Structure formats: C-alpha cells, structure tokens
Length: 164
Image 1 (cartoon, one colour):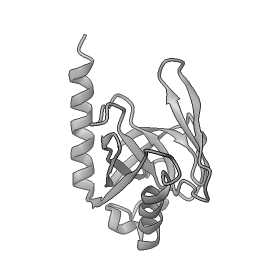
Image 2 (tube, one colour):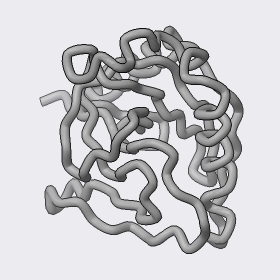
Image 3 (cartoon, one colour):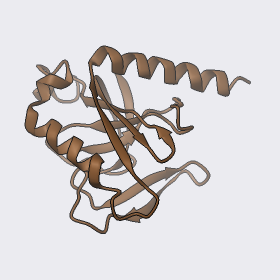
C-alpha cells in the first residue's frame, strides 16, 4: 500500500497539476473535447519516474476524489504509455481495504473488467488529439508485479536524486 495524492477527479474535463513551487493545485488546461478522465488521477509522493516527474497513478474507484486528497491505495497493474516526452507509465491503483472494502477482490488489472480497461485505454489514446505537438501511444497493460517494480524503482530514483 502507498499514498496517492489526487490531482484530477474522475470524470473531470479539467487537467489539474500539483505545482511544486507554490504547493498548490494549478489548472494546467481544459480538455476542449468530449474526453473525461476515466478515473481519479494523481501521483505517488517521493517518487521519480522516467519523465522527471513523480510517478503517475490512476486511482480507480466508484467515486470522485477532490484535488489535494491523500488516499491509501494498492497497486493492481500499470498502463504502459509513451508520449511526446518519453516513457510515461501510470500505475493502476484501487483503494486499500482499510479505506474501501469494495475492491478487496481486485488484485490485478485483469480483475477490473474489460469495460474499465477499454475506457482507460481509449482516454489516453485520444485526450491529447487536439493539442498541437502532443500525443500518447498506449503500449498495453502490465501486471501488479510489474507495477510494484516500477513503484520500487521510482522510490530508488527519488532517493538517489534527493541525497542530502
């Protein structure tokens, strides 16, 4: 289990990002299309992924979470993507059983159901389409073990970069 900081609520048309300089949530841009985030979206604190940002997380639940909320989650897989800046994997997470027992039977991304996986893949393949020079290629899904390894490596990357 690990904490996730939510930046974007499920079903939002607005892309928010945590601004590390101000400590506030910033409106990055409005998605001027019919796309909505298929899940709550955020990041894992004290991690560093290949794109130089904290590790992204799709927090899958039946409800919206407000930007800035910290919630405990479990890794159930990874969405493997590449965008105009390089590799940009996103952990697939569900609430920890202490927070919400609804997802206690979800242990791998394959337990999420094909409809959920299709919505996630379709969103990321298309949400940047009207932004000039931006694109995303979805390479597929990976298991909870792959997600946990990516999480472990992102903690190592962060600690190596932030040595006092």
